[in-house]
Structure formats: structure tokens, C-alpha cells
Length: 404
Image (cartoon, rainbow, N blue to C red):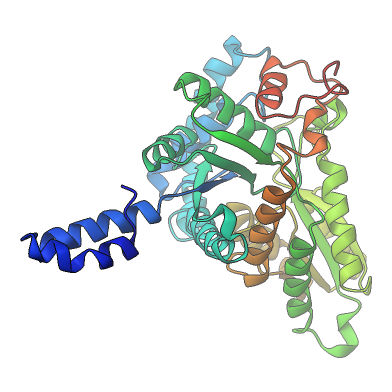
């Protein structure tokens, strides 16, 4: 297993003399190549995921509504959550299946995440040779590939050093927190708690590469307006909303989303009027606002014609951009007379963004921290044991966090 190409080349003559055939030599060369290519550092890209076909919508929704970290229907593991989640998933499936059918039959988030991961790993091999070879893995919370599938794949690959890299730039207990909790649960269920050396990139709302990637997309979209109109276009930074119960519990998401917006606006020179707004509210309980669906008609009533939605909390296209924004909000804006209404292109295949991903991982590996200092601070009003246990397991335990 330890043979190198150089060793094989030097022994080529002697093996031929001993009667070892060319096919056998090629097998030895292949074994050497596989040994050299063994993954040294795995990077797990964590995200919500999305159904790749309409047939996978119901399982996706069932996992989503069963997740107590994002939706609480009573006490943890309660009767309400156990029985209401399947009921709600069944009721909502036909409507959501139709929405996915209208955007091509499924979510493109896996395609974009795998492409971004591949580009990131290739860049990391060049800029961080001491931790190479790198391999990107995808672990979705509610769709394939699920966390336990990804753990099995890493086990087969023999990888030991692993970075869990959230693809939500702004931390929320309902997104990154849920993925970290699920990763911790699956490691315990599968008896893999000692199989990998973990660290976590749990937030990166103001990383310069992320900010530049958003700024490039915005600047490009603004160029489609006339020079007279360009600086008057209203920039609507739309982020996924959050129940107010989570905000009041101490979730840092609103502040971090605001930090991203502020950094992006400073990057483009603070030339345009702007607002941070929130979309994708579900159910009757209060959610963080103002809601995107309300802001658009309110601006139209005030006489605004030109506005651009910037999906500031998303790193690739999915149902919230391709259907909710591009179809529902776009149609509403046009009906209200907003003739210059549009959406900034998602980051998707942006080279600047992929380079930022590689830089974030490189910096993380060089610094050597297990997590950010923030991860150790549990939300002040949080009482969930799983949150504390998961944070401690991944190395976020600190003197300041132990009492919170």
C-alpha cells in the first residue's frame, strides 16, 4: 500500500525479469494511485436540501415538519409533533409538488452544491497542499443525501479529518443548529463518535469573498437599468424568515443577516436605497418581518417602479428563489405596476463564491479552532439538551458557555 510511482518505475526492469506481467504491473500502479489519492481532509457541506423529483416531496416535507429544531408543535417528542407532522406533510404535498413541477420537476440545490463543492476541493488542493487531497461531501437535512448516508460514504473513504461546513452563511438554530444536532445524533446512533476528527465552520456572514460575490451579482443586475434610474433602484435583501419564538429565545440570525447586508452595501458604495426583508412564512404564528410578500405591494403603492430582490441568505437556487420569488412575487409586482422589478442572480456557479468557500476552509484549517467562539453560546432561553450536547461534542464548550 505504501508503494509510490517512483518505486514502481525503478523496479520495472526487475519485475519484468522475474516474469511479472504488464497487467500485474498496471494493477500495482493503480493501487499506488489509489493510495496517493486517499482523502486526507473531508469537507461536509450542510444544507436543508430539496426534493429532486415530485415523488420525493412528501418525504422531504415529513422530515421538515418532524424537525423540532425548526417547527415546534408542543413539547419535544410530543404527541402533537408525532401525529401532526405526517398530517401536515400529506396536506401540503400536492400543492408543493405542483410548485416543483413548475420549476422543472425538482430542486437544483443538490446539483449546485455538488458543483460548488467540487470546485472548492480542487482549489483547496492548490492553496492548502498540506491538508490535501480534499473531498467535498454533501449532507442535507431533509433530502438525499441525508447525514447518515454521508457518514457511511466518509467511512468507506477512510477519511479521518473532517470539517462540517454550513452552507447557511448566517447562523440560526433552525438551520445550521438543526444540521449540527442531526450530525451529532447520527454519529451516536451509528456508533461513529470516535471515527472522525471534527471541526465546524458554523457561520461566515461577513467573509470578504461572500460579500464580493453578492456585490458582483448586484452590480451586474443594476447594469440592466438606465444610468438615470440605476442609483434609485430599491434593493430588497430577502432572507428566509424565522418564527418570533426563536428570535425571542435569542437566535442570532437577524443580527447576522443584517451584518451581511451592511457589508454588501458598503462594498457597492451605499448608492441605493435598501431594506432587509423576510420570506417563506409558514403557519399562523408570528414570524420575523417585514414579510417580502407585503413589502412589494407597499412599495408599489408608494409609486416605486424599480426594485431588485437579493436572496441574501441563500447560496444557490431552490424553491424559494425559483418559485416564490420568480413566480409569485414577480407576478405580484408586475400586477402592481412595478415594471422594473427583478431578482439578482443567485450565487450558484460564481467563481468568486467558490473561491470564497475554499478560502474559508483554508483559514479554518490554519487557525485550528474547533468552532467559532459564538457556537459555544447557547441561546439564552434555550432549554434543549441536544443543543448543549452537540455543541460540547464538536468542541464549542467553554467556561462562558457552560452555564447558558
